[in-house]
Length: 294
Image 1 (cartoon, one colour):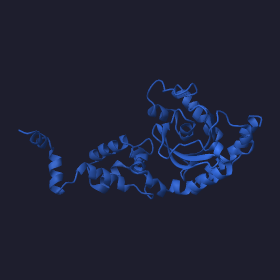
Image 2 (spheres, rainbow, N blue to C red; image 1 turned 90 degrees about the vertical axis):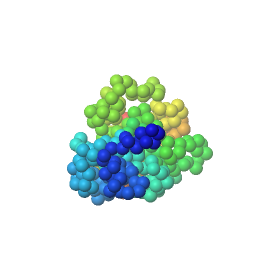
Image 3 (tube, one colour; image 1 turned 45 degrees about the vertical axis):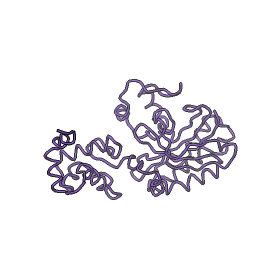
């Protein structure tokens, strides 16, 4: 008996039934998974297993297994504490060329280019993918003194250790964080990296209440950032806009020039283009500067 014969005998009855129903070289499990992904749309961004089972005429237990598989690979993510799902960031990883056609980057690129032109600083849009942050759009500085920042689209950094990630997690509860980080101690990249979930949550809440965040060499030595959240029409944080300064500290002259408010206004503008209507107006940046005595 050859290895091919042995493998052929391991085919399940379900697979044989599917092969008879779909002749040729189709892979039934893959086909079903892709059909599930195809059901999600801008009009129906959130779907559950019962509805998918009804539409696709697939047994509910099979749909649950497919959903869990797609979730484990990042193609789907939980939309709430129930069994509803929405598309995950892994869908975007199928090709970063596709990012240019997405609403977030289409609408956001002119905004960060204007922010770059106004501040002279390299500006980015980032999103969160599980425990990582991903750079999805970039406006490179034309100013020689600031042009050394060379982070590319697609670069991934640990969410818990970066200011970007902490701002992006601003909607998460302490329980959400414990699910995302089940380990007792978080990996520390610098002495400023949060070491516990409780410490991370406290930092996230501080940034969320402030409405923006500043980092001075907290993740990478000699790099400082100002970061503000972007929200969609549901009010959920879906991205951040950030400016990067290749200095261990942010010069007072940059803060005096209104850098914080400029970053926040850029984030607010993108939020509004995503149909978010903020309840509170800008101004937290000025309050922060006053707290610094600037």
